[in-house]
Each structure stands twice: as C-alpha cells, then as structure tokens.
Length: 128
Image (cartoon, rainbow, N blue to C red):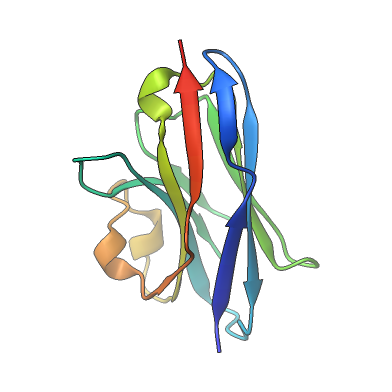
C-alpha cells in the first residue's frame, strides 16, 4: 500500500530556510503528480507546489522564487526547499500524490481534491 511520510519541519526565524522531505513507499506508478500543501489553523488547505512525473513543476504565487520542489527518483523522495521564510508560511505541511494523466498537474491551481494519497504532515513555524 502507498505510504507517504513527511519530515524536516521545525521552527525558524524570518528569513530562515527549511527542507521538507516526503518519503514514498509502495508507489509503483510511473505517471504521477506529487504535491506539497499547507494548512494553517482556521484556514483551508492550500496547494504550495506540484511535481509532474515528466519533471514539470508548478508553484503557488505566494511561494514563487522562494520555494523549490524536487524529487529524487532513486530515493523515491519528494523535497520542498523553503528559503526566505515568512511568518505567514507557518502551517502544517502535507505531501500528497496521485496517479496522473492529462495535464492537470501543471495547472496553476494546485487543488487538494485531485490527490488521493496523503502523508501525516510536518509542522513549520516561522517567527518574526
């Protein structure tokens, strides 16, 4: 069965950096979309970045130029490098995956409704 396990969250000051990891096990599909989402208390879950199995990436406007999504296929691990962190980046961050075909992974709208497989989340706190 598919399992996604996030790690790498923590507490940093404004301007700091963190790298989140999402280790995927039981995933045998060659065409997929994987994404990072975040949810702050009292807010809806929002898409942060998406990674298409063809190597394409998509970012929310709020993180463009600061966050980088990547994947190490040998380790079957998805990463989110977060630089220049701001207090508004504080949230629980989730990794998600879906079997994919059709182009939606490259849409600017990174919709959590498109994803079936989710990790348990890792907390990121950014203090001013």
